[in-house]
Length: 172
Image (tube, rainbow, N blue to C red):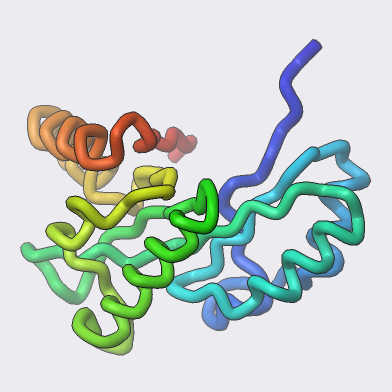
């Protein structure tokens, strides 16, 4: 039997620039498609957390809490990278909230709350991290032909997150 499919990157009505999915509809759709769980990963916020949690639990699916985050790009601050952080547990939720708070307090650039790469070292307890596919720094290194740089970044993240760092693959 095939493993069930679970969406791990979903932007909702709380991703103000690029989300349209209503949380009640998301939970119902996940249930109707036989998904045991679904993640909410709005862009740089967890505003919909309580509404999502209640809707997911009411429909009998496991809510996975997370966020899509901006990652500062030292080479071009106007083009930050992206990555996704998913909470494994309450410790992960606190780690995510700490990263978001620091991004809004100390990482503002051009209206975006950006996480500085160095903040990730030692700040990821309880988090699973997805690379951001072609929008992440590893993906961008690969797209620019820098396989050695991509490998170095991925290796460093894997060490920082203790085996909880995953490379995302997407068709381009």
